[in-house]
Length: 102
Image (cartoon, rainbow, N blue to C red; front, side, top):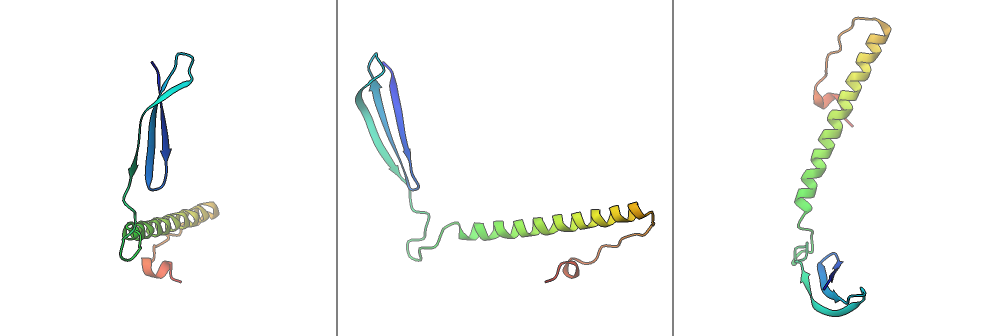
């Protein structure tokens, strides 16, 4: 006898069912079914996301990574400009706080 497994995957729960099949492939009967309900991803008192702190730290890491990549690209661009003009000028890096200020 063959079986089919059905899943209903939602945001806060998963529903499942096991159905047996007849020889011709048509469903015969429901063998078992159930649900699994997850805890809410929010603080019950304040309704704030439990991931808020991690999301903030992840945003800071992205900003720092992008800033470092911009500095690297800018340095490569200036070095390519110097190489293409033939001048032997050394580019000295500036401090991090003065290079990218708003």
